[in-house]
Image (tube, rainbow, N blue to C red; front, side):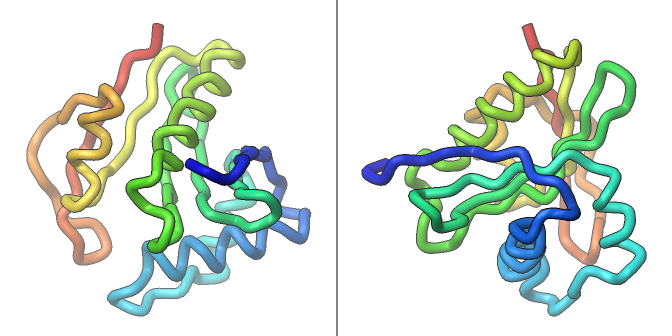
Length: 146
């Protein structure tokens, strides 16, 4: 990582939130071309959102959904030209610290088949078998936090 990075907590009302949605659609919804529906966007407003910036350029995003002391991590995306540069790891570390600071003790996700190795490298464990979500193979993965 040669550029300085910052990670910001963002609210749905902030102008940067629209940039998060555009990045997520570009990375996570292509193919197939599935833009977020108005209902999905309304539900997103209830979640905790994070933007990873290199200088002022949005390069990554993640969202967390609280379920008691457990959080579901979703919508994790790093710009295609910035993947494999340590940005995903930085975003994971930030989110895990954020969860711990709020009394959480576990995080899980539905990892795309192409992201399973990344999550394994981050200390996540697979749970169960692959399943179809949005016509893409996913695996439920979890990590207990210290």
